[in-house]
Length: 104
Image (cartoon, rainbow, N blue to C red):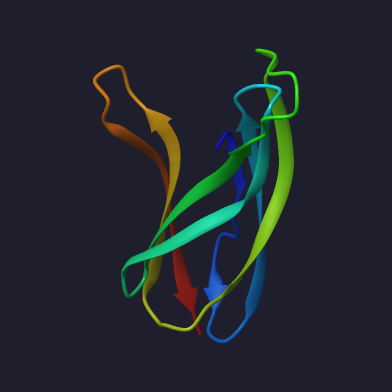
């Protein structure tokens, strides 16, 4: 994940389109969608999923894909979104985090 267009606040029972720019790591990986995993009631881990194509030349060209997903706010409090950005040089998962309060 390179960039996220996250609302500054949510309202209960509203649906939001969250824009995301992801990076395809090479010419044979195609973005498929997101795996959105609840870590707690209002904590979501978001991982972009890609599929490597066997019948396509695998160049080293990086490409950005602008996409989005819909999110429905169901709980009061503050939501935390953790977008996976890759692993650091020690192999530890890295995340871009956003906190979004739910307002009345």
